[in-house]
Length: 222
Image: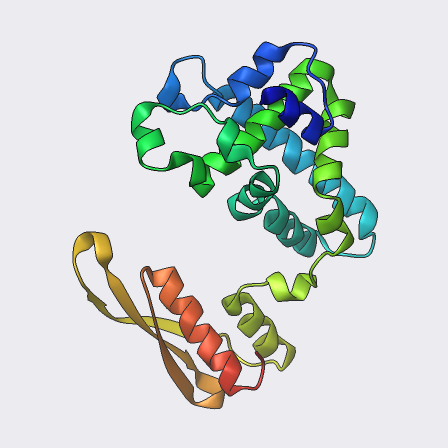
């Protein structure tokens, strides 16, 4: 199975033990992929960051950071792992195996990073870069509009600043529910427009983002 995975990745390992370690979750023993994950994370961030810098020469640092974050986040890595059918190759402990750990996004994402780290150790930076760029080829060709990656609070702030309005004030109205399942209700107020709307979320930040989204919608700025 690992031979097929190597072919899918486009990298034949000179040191197959690195591939074995990259596919070994911590639940399966001490010789696991956590250190490789750390290494692969750094490699992935640099390679994607450098490629975005090349592809988007006029984009600001903030927008480059948002673009990179959208590409290296766990959800995207898990998608790539799914395309590779990686779950069936991961070595898990009995507990994780029984609970369906091979489908868990966090495990899939961490294993992808460990694979990048393993390739780097096996053959160097250029080999790791080649594999990463090949796996990200379509995503790099179809990059989202950087504006769409901004969170609602940031977009609302920029909307107001462009019109020389005061920034909104956020006030927590209530916190309900049990400690591990709290619900926050927040009011966002724009004094210059005499406009207030409420939002809810599982965290204060989430509730503020929800309130900001509602304000943007009311201002016809989706």
